[in-house]
Structures are given as C-alpha cells and as structure tokens.
Amino acid sequence: MTANNFNLEQPPRRWPSVLLLVASLLWLVALALVVAVATYQFRYAERIYPGVWVSHVSLGDLSRAEAEAVLESAGIPFPTEQVAVRYGDRVWTIRPEDLKVALDVESAVTRAYQVGRRGSLVEDLQEQALVYRNARVIDPVFTFHDESFLAYAVALMAQEVNHPPHEATLKVQGLDVLATRGETGLEVDEAATRAALEERFVSGGGGEVELVVRVTQPALPDVSEGEKLVKRVIGSPLTLEYEDGEEGQLSVTIDQETLADWMRWRMDIQPDWQPLFTVTLNEAGVRAWVEELATELFLPAQDASFDFDLESSTLIPVVPSVWGRELDVEETVQRILDQAATDVRTVPLPIIPVKPNLAMENAAKMGVKELLIQASTHFAGSSAARVHNIAQAASRFHGVIIPPGGVFSFNEHLGEVSAETGYEESLIIWGDRTQVGIGGGVCQVSTTAFRTALLGGYPIIERYSHGYVVNWYGEPGMDATVYAPRVDFRFRNDSDYYLLIKTETDTQAGTLTFSFYGTESGRTVEISSSPVENVTDPPPPVYTEDPDLPTGTIKQVDWAVKGMDVTVQRIVRQGDEVLSEDAFVSLYHPWAAKYRYGPGTTLPPGVVPEEADVEG
Image (cartoon, rainbow, N blue to C red):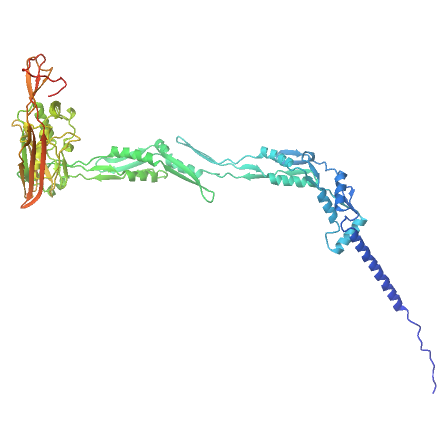
C-alpha cells in the first residue's frame, strides 16, 4: 500500500475582518451624520435657516424677534407702481403713498421661518440643504397701515358711479294715464373693490383693477297691469240701461270725469315681491250719485180712484191705477262697483216695479158693495169763502179707499192748504182766538169725517176738540179739529174689507155728507153723552177796530158761547158681545162775542176796545 502525503492546511481568510471594518466605518459616518443633522436642527430650532432672505435682507441664523427687528430697521421700500381702477371709459389712479401702505414684518418673518418646516422630515432636510447652497429670497409682504384711506378712495369712486334704480310710476291726471317703466341702477361693491386693490397693492404688482359694480333692479319694474286697469275704468263712459214697457229704454250715462273722480287705486306687494294692483271706486261717491238717480227715476204707484154705483152695487174705476217704479240702490251701487274695471261698459239698471195698493183689476175683490154709515153736518150761513173751502177740502176725500187694517189720516189726504191749492181766506180758530186765515171751513170736513167714523164704530186713533163750542158743528162733543202737521184726525178700518169714502157738498142747502161703503159686519153702535160739566159763562164782548169798515159800522164776527166739559160715550157691539167702549172728552173754553168796528165809531157804554193787533 502506498500512501500519498498531501499538505491540506489552507491559508487564513481575511474578508470578514474587512467587512466588519467597513460596516463599522459606515455606522460611524451615519452616526456622525445623524448627530450633525440633530445638531443642525437643534441649533435652528427657534431660528431661521441660513440662506433665507426677505428682499435684500438676510434673515438666516436669526430668531423671529431678531428677524423682525432687522426688517423693521431695513427700510425695505414699497414698489413704486400705481394702480389704475377702470370702469368703462372712467379711470381712477391710486398711488401707494396715498394709502399708507407698510411692510408686513410679522407676515414676512413668518414666511421666512416656515422655509424648511413645511413638509415631511426628508422634504424639510432637502429644502434646508437647497436653501443652504442656494439662497431663498422671499418677496416682502405689505399691508395697509390705515384701511380708512383705501375705503375713502373707493367711496369717492362710488359717488361718481352709483345711482339708485328708478321705480315704475303710475299717475292719473284728469283722464290721462301716465305710466313709466322702472329703470335699473348701479351700485359699486365697495368691499369687493377694496379687496381687489388690497391684493394688487400688497403684491406690489401695480397695473389695473376693474371697479366692481353691481346692477340693481327696481322693486317695481312694471306697472302695465295697473295702467290697464285704470284705463278700463276711465277709458270710456259707463252706461246704465233699463227697458221700460211704456216709456221705452231708459239710459243713464256715468261720464269719464265722474268715474275718474270716484276712482281709487292701490298697489300691494305680494309675498313673491310681485306688485298687485287694485282699482276700485269710492263707494260713498257712487252711493250719493245712485241715490240722486233713484230720486229722479222714482215713479210712485198711483192708486185707482173709484165711485160706487148704487144701482149695480159695484165699484166703478174713475181714475185708473198706475204701476210705479223705484231703483234698487244697493244693487245698483254693487253693479257699478263690479263693472267699472271691466270691458263691459253697459250695466242693467235694477228697477223694482211698485204695485199700486188699489189696482183696478182688484175692484171685485175689495168687498165694497153697500152703504155702511152716513153722517152730515150743516154750514148754512157761512161766508162764501168758507163754503168754497169746505167744498174744496171735501173733494179731497171723495173716492178715498182704506184697505182692511189701514189707517185713515185726514191730513194725509187733505194735502197742503194754501192759496196755491185753491183755498181762500176765511175765519179760523187759532188758539183762543178767531182770526182770518187760509182754509177756514176745513174743520167742518174733519168734523163730518169724525162723526161718520164714530157712528160706524171704527177705532178712533187721534182726535182733538176745538177750543170752544162752534155752532156749525152741531151738538158739543161731536167735532174734530185739524191743523197739519201736528193736529190730525185718524181712525182705523178694522173690518175685513175695503172701505170707500164718498163725500157730497150741497152748497145751496149748506150740508156736507160723508158716506162709507163696504161690507156690512152686523155690528151696532150706541152713542150717548154724559151730563155737561163745568159750565162757565162767556167773558165780556170784545171790540176790535177794523180799518176796512166805514165809520159808524159795528159788525159781529163771533158769538158768545159758554165753556163746558162734554164726554161722549160709544159702545160697539157684535150681537150681544161688546167689542169696544170709548169715551171722548171735549174741554171747551168760554168764548166771548167778537165785534169789529170802523175807525171813529162810537162804541156802547162801558166797552173797552182791544188793541188793533188782537184778532176776534
């Protein structure tokens, strides 16, 4: 066996030692770098990093307070550019020195301090390194030391540009409607303009800035709707029409001037800020006009006048009845108010037909078929004037018809007593005297009417006796005096049928007769008088001078009568049933005989004449 002897021993390996050394060196370098960075950061923890400048002033390695002090004393000038403010063709120039612009030291230092401190650690280290190698220059920031200068400058511009919007207007002058549309206005937005100028000045850019101007709208841009409404009201007349079967078409026109005088218009702003126009008419003015029109158009209904034919026992129309008319005032006012602001210019008149109380066609239904009661008084010996007045007054009652339940008023049917209505002067009783006056003799008629109603059993509502007993009126207590409008004679037709009054004046015999016609009710009337009481003698005769009488003439014009109290009782029965009992009391004063004598006449012994103004 042969054995080979080889030297297996390898030389020693040196690589691990080298690697260890390199690693150690790298770790030391990294440690040194970290220490250096940490030291650098610590050094500038409260300072501005080197290489930072504001304008031409270096702030590196300075604290914030030191940097502010350096900038305060550095006197960095503001850019000299002025700023032009333009609006259309208008240009205003503003210089920085006019606005008290100053360097914003605090802002500049803050920006310088933030260099190298605005990102992540790596970004900040990179920025710090770049700034260290290449300086970072920060533009200075300027601010307004007193902003009132800028505000004043902008306010002056606004004064030249601003003008308020013009509201739409609506005026009525006579019949002319004057409407104008609204116009927009201009208003400088001073805050926005100041902000734009501040930005331009603090940046030092100069140049041009647009004046910020807003267009302002009028609150009321348009009044065309109101104009249309007003023109509808006064643009043409308003006609009121009524078709009358007998008179044809009635037409009344309200002219434009009257409509314009009545017109009232107003404008209200709605929640959506839109105008709402309302055109109306003055209701009081319309009503006054309509009431006057109603008076003009009023046509009273005319009752038929009847006579009673004894042979046929029927009513015969003497004067035909006529329908009347009246205007419905309230409805007319409302129609005018409703139609005035429309295009419909014709308004129907609301005429109300008025039916007569006594229509010819109702004659057969009135129940006037027989004579009920009749009474007469005597006036023989009366003067011609008194006889004339009696006939004149009595004629007013011939043919009067009283409906069932209706009230007869003597004065109502008598009407006016005057010379114009056909009456003459005659002796009348006035208070406690007899004197000459228009209408003497009328009380003969009222007395006759009273007696007839009394004997007929009709309820007497109002009756007054004369001041003294008048021989023409028959037995005392059966007379009735009247004097419009305060003293009247009235009674009620308490039957179920109409009552016709006929009068007959016999001037030759001197009698006046009232006759009542209707339907007999079967009732009976008893009239009696109580014994006369409180009888007093008449005073001495009264003599009054009358210049119209010749000398030596004495004329008696009134006769003496005694004073007395008279009570007339009336009992009305229906078979055995008493329907009513009445007592009519008359208090008569004593009355002296009255004489008139001519001037210079010798009077009887012991007579003392009255003054001439005392009438007898």
